[in-house]
Length: 242
Image 1 (spheres, rainbow, N blue to C red):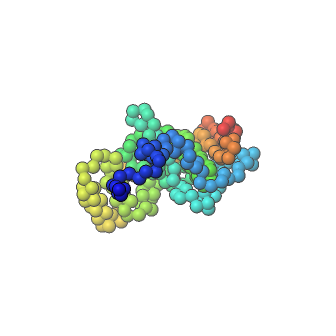
Image 2 (image 1 turned 135 degrees about the vertical axis):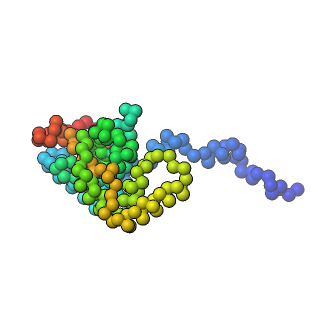
Image 3 (image 1 turned 90 degrees about the vertical axis):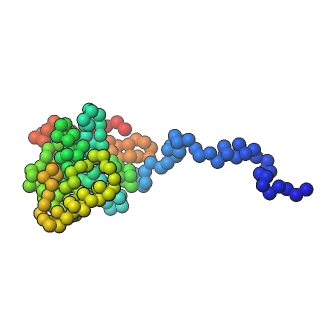
């Protein structure tokens, strides 16, 4: 008698056992098995860190760019939500100097309203190829209307058109509705190249704390925090426990 070609193969393994062997690992086990850094940890000697944290930040940022970190100037902006809870999103760093770290937001966007109500925020940079992160925390102040307009005019026409929409994070009925509004805004900019949204606001985060975190393979991570009560006082440097 010939074997039935539709019958399961007789491999000596029960189908249930085979299914169990092919079952993917639990999410917890899968996550624990993922690599945590894209490259070997960089060198960092906190005792040789400069007195000015801006100098150290820009040095780390340049190294991240040289190491091929995608969008190394991207950062997580954390604010206080309307309900008192935390809110966060990723933005692009506009500038950093002795005054602070700069970013832009539409005044009517959630982050714009949150900053108007609670002008405090935190920034987080993460560069996995260098196994580094930087945390910046402080008060936030809006720039002048002229400075904000100059920032917006430096952007591409499509980005400026999106700022003119002024409905960020509101419910959208359809993609067609957004497309029509965007095309109309773009036409306004083409007709008036100097047109800007008055709600577009450049912000400066004036830091009170800046932490530089360097990972280590033995988990004895190096942490250096710069602290000062206000911009009129010199920075103090403190090592932190991992």
